[in-house]
Amino acid sequence: MPVLRRSALSAALLLVASSALAMPPGAKKDLPPPPAESTPDIATNAKADPVLKAAIAAPTRPAADRARDGFRHPEETLLFWGLKPDMTVIDLQPGGGYWTEILAPYAAKTGGTYIGGVADLANPKLSEGAKKGRANFEAKYADKGRYGTPRYTGFGPVSGPLAPANSVDLIITSREIHNWIAGGYFEKSLKDCYAALKPGGVLAIEEHRADPKPQDAKASSGYVATDTIVTAATKVGFKLAGASEINANPKDTKDYPFGVWTLPPTRTNSEGGHALTAAERAKYDAIGESDRMTLRFRKPA
Image 1 (cartoon, rainbow, N blue to C red):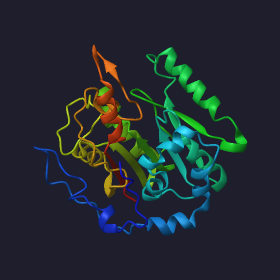
Image 2: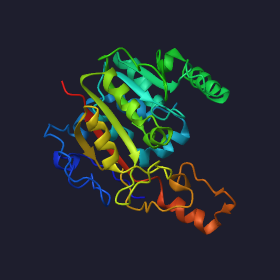
Image 3: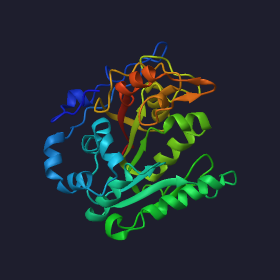
Image 4: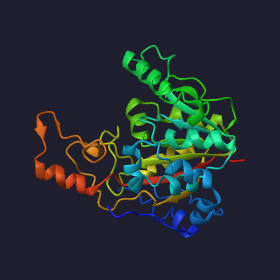
């Protein structure tokens, strides 16, 4: 996949509700465009934030994470979402910690607070594996010299508030909304985010993009239509403030035997009696990681 970095992204490119937010067949076409707002110059802001640059360039970041930077564009993406010093940031379902490895050290050095939205221990249906996974995750980031003092909040289908109302600057969800849809807690999650964010706070979304193909009801392929997210977020009160093609991949045809998990980094090779040939595996690997929408929603001030 060609690296889709931009040294300077204009407002016209970032606020492309009419083109970047292409609707699947049959989708609503009357969604309001994002309001005009000043869009930071990515290159200028990157030079102005050496702490973020240092966090991304840190040799202590896992090699597997650094190998994905060409697909995930961490610096450009975080600047587009509006990351700044002294912010309180919630990272929902941080998984293997790709963003944690950047955001926790950044918060520690800039007076901010990193909060991981992890497995909800209050959920009576939470598996022992999930409980162990949360404990392991917290232990992984216990080095105060490197990560400061990360905080954690339970997140899931029956979790309580993410944080005190109107207390968070930025909430990030990265490639997780398809799970919320499949699990039946998409609307709840958006409401929880809205309640936790300060007026003017940002909900930052990166998700596997179904468009221009339609999305199945449960997002079982891992791909979500842009209209699904924009409509749901608008319903709970968010305003679409920006859209970027930073994480787009035009090679992604979105028609794979194991859904988006056929592609890197998951690279599912066999399931349900079907196995990929070496040639198929090579073809899918050559596509790279998925085509992703990158959106910025704002809670009205």
